[in-house]
Amino acid sequence: QVQLVESGGGLVQPGGSLTLSCAASGSAFSINAMGWYRQAPGKQRELVGVITSGGIASYGDSVKGRFTISRDNAKITVYLQMNSLKPEDTAVYYCHADTVTISPRRYLAVWGQGTLVTVSS
Figure (cartoon, rainbow, N blue to C red):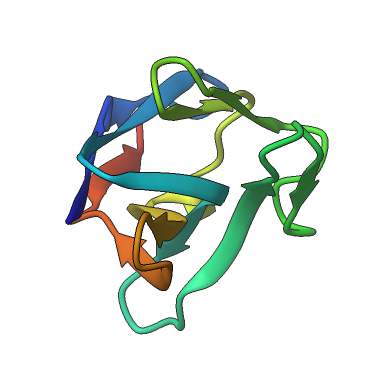
């Protein structure tokens, strides 16, 4: 069983920066891709960024050039560095991981509970 716990959300002024962390815990598993998604009130959940186990990252169009996703495989943690934040970045940010259990091999998408990021003056 795998659990994801996000941290680092909070209130920040426009133009500011914030870094989110997502730590995976459990046993008898491995993780392939990890990523961040977000959902604002009244809107659909959207991709923020995804990073492969090899460190290849991709981003949603709305955050390209401002956000950076990274991961530490030893710590089984993914990070999201957010710069030049805008009010429209306000949302609940969810961590996601594609997990694989070990013996027997099973594939399971896992989501964190989310952390709220509010960008406001």
